[in-house]
Structure formats: structure tokens, C-alpha cells
Length: 383
Image (cartoon, rainbow, N blue to C red; front, side, top):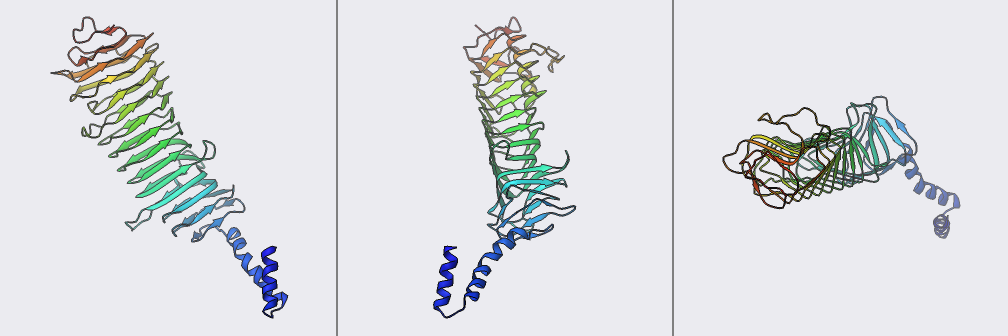
């Protein structure tokens, strides 16, 4: 009211009637209300907008095509075929998007070399069922943050994209293709799976993978998995990239717990760095390397703890027909020279050996504590 009185006084001083002052004041305030109330199904938003109520569209969505626009959901829910972002510097905050089509949120600017970009703060992107509402980021950037209750994505696909996911919950599958440099921090990924193809430079830190197996696929790598928890999967983590040696994925300081197989190297185990992890209570084996051949990995598998693995194994044999059970099991079919060095790994209360390694396939780096097999195995000594 102070600004309105000041406006009226100024207009009186100019010889204009009070009614004119009132009209000017109302004219200055009306557009903000109109913008907040005028969002309709199928609209293209080109200015900052705030929802004042839930918006439900039977077969329509919303689109943002102007850089720098903010859509404030105002704690409300937008339900429709989805939100399409075709601009950069877009912010969406504080509410829910419920997608009735396969894609609930699309960040993509077609026909342009300029990347689209969106920042989501305390936004849940959900689907009406298990096949709808995923987030698609193509040739674009995405940042999502909030709390595990207010920042939610149901299915995430990155194609030639970058993303930062912080303190969020991701349900259903995450697929990363032809992408470089994404980050998942302090989040929970549940009831889905993560796969990468031709992608490099991902960082995962302080994140829970719950019934969410990870596969590092073709020509992928240079990822960092640090201080995460992998639990409740058949095989929690599989490396089968076979990429160049420069694409070394680092697996450092993680916990693999209550899986059947904690970590599996089915191809390309000459690539990763595996150190300082804890493998606990995995029913069949903590770490299984099962390959017909591989190149020499210059980085030792070192300083890992294997505790209580192999207590209820499934009937699993390696490529040589040997029973798989226990802490660390290594079978490399063609091993004219040792391919791996094992150092300072510790085992306790495993259902089999701490380390079982095909003779001639590993180098004893010293400091391994726990029973080793098969016996005799002159290339491996465990205290």
C-alpha cells in the first residue's frame, strides 16, 4: 500500500484525478495474477509462471521455448502428456509432474546445435503407471536436487547429455548413452537398473543402489564409484566394457551387501581399479572374475574386506567348471602370464575360500589374510 499511496500522490501532483491513479496501480498489479492463473493445457510458456492450483490435462502438455524461464509449480501437481523444455537456463521448482505418456519430462531442443538445459528443484517427475513419466535428456543438461522425498525421477534416459542428481530418489531404469560427465550424489536408486553404453566420466558418490544392478557396457568407463552401497540384487555390479585402458573405472570404498554376486567381471577386467571395498553377506560370492581371456591389469585388487560371503550359494560354476563360492573367485581361461595382482585382501567367515584363483592367473602381492585355493597353488600364499 505504501507504493500505491506514493503513486496516487505523484499523480495528484501532476493534476490527474485519483481514479486515474487507481487505474494505473491496478494495471501494474494485474498481469502477475493473470500470468499465474492463465496456464492452460497445451500452452507454450515464454515468461515466468506460477501455478495456483493443480492442472490436469487429458491429452495435452506444457512447453517452454524461451531461455531463462522459471516455472514455479507452487506445490501443485501438473498432470498431462508431459513438460517439454526446448530452451536453456530453465528452472522448474516445487511440485509434481505426472506424465501420462512415456516421457513425463523432455529436455531437448530439436534442430539446434545449442543445448537445452533445465534445473529442477524439489520436483517429482512421476508416471501414471510403470511405463510412463520417465525423464529424457537429449543433447542437453539437467540438474535435479532437493530431498529424497521432494526430488524424484521415475526412469531416466541420458543421450549425448550431462546431468547432476543430488539428494534425489530415482526409481526404475537409468540408461546412459553417448554421454560424458554426469554426477549422482547422496541419492537412492531403487527397483531398476543402470546401464551405460559408449559413455565416460560418470561420478557416483554416497549413493544407495537398492535392487538396482549396474552394468558398465560397451566402450564405457572412466567412471568413479566411491562410498556407495550396493544391496539386494542378483548381481549388483557387472563390468563388461572391454574399453581402452585409458577408460579405467574406479571402484573404491564401496559396500556390496546382501546380493548373490557383489561384483562381476565378465569382460574387460584389465580396465577397472578395485580397492578398499567391503563385500559382506553376498550369498554366492563377493567378487567374481570369470573371463575366457584378459589383458594384464597393472592395478592390484587390493585392501578389500570379504566377510560372510558364500553362505547360501546358487549352483554356479566358472568357465572352467569350478564351483564358485566365497570371497574372491578368479578364473581366466587363457593366462600365459599372471593377469592380476592380489594384495592385502582380508577374509573372515566366508563360505568358501577368501581367494580362489586359477593357478598361474594371479600374482601374489602379499598381505592377503584368509584361506586360499585351490590347494596347492604355488602362485598364491595367504596368511
